[in-house]
Image (cartoon, rainbow, N blue to C red; front, side, top):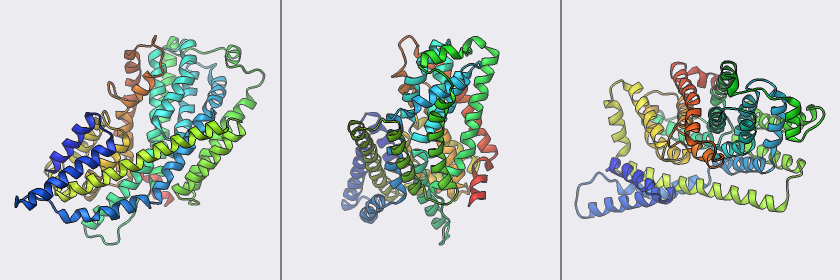
Length: 464
């Protein structure tokens, strides 16, 4: 029954029903079925009394201080997107690096990294970079595959570079899973893992990915100069509408977003603020940046608030549906079933981890990170953590895995986002070819994390 429940939810989602309603509706149907069968005297393994915990779960969700970071980080990202901070930053970086072979590509990667750290939302980063940088790269003679591949890959950095919305949600779910795992093992004073721990753990892998992207861009520019040609600075200035020194533009475009990111991450790393408090700093800073750029007006503010409310409502509605699904899954004995299945797999904890990573990778083709975080992680997380895995390492592995899934043809979400803003002259096959090297880089990062867990766990252990 637990497996049937899981596959039914996946089938309902693939039929196109809203995620939150699919989770809650399917779970309620199975709960009603279990109660009915028990009333009829059919011996089903359903503990109906567990459903009494639902009100407390809903209250816990709505009063969760950690999840307050979600609307604030979303507000920060939308404000930066609407205030055109990325456009100014991209112009400055293009003028700085554009005269080098592959320089525009390096500029896109660096700006995308900063934008991903600022917004934390994959779709927003990919669409913004596609609209701003793709026409310029194509006009300067860049290979369509290289241009689109670098934009897609850079956009997915929003999954791993903090302050990422994905890491906020994943941190909260893993924290609950870690406590459940320890209580199941008889540890009555359980250790905790926080969103801040995941932020710190993601820094080294995220920066290594950025370095690897830049090295690849430089290698292509060196081996195939026609794919990433250098641009003339005067021509670039004329095209971008800037004259004189690039220093004022660089200061205006680079320093404010960097200071904002440093303020957000620095307050967390330095122990001065929790992620929730830091998100308030980020939202206030984004508001001041929009005000300083003279982009803030009532219509834009209305649109920003509406978008933030819509995204936040979606997240919390999915979380409520996922909490109901998880409760019914456990009422049918699903957690014990998953534990038995993992223990029966060859290879022990290594085999179980490989299977989970493969399932998450495949689910990334049809589900967004929010659904995977709220549905899959609460099921497999406690079992894997009981087998001795580090929660921070597991969280970073899941984040990088989903990042790779969202980039993989033919179903990667990042590919769909970019295809929507790419000129018809660029074929879809070029986008697919362009992302392949970056997928290999990310798979290499997954392998490096598997062989050297300290890449994710060392920095959090030092800063604790």
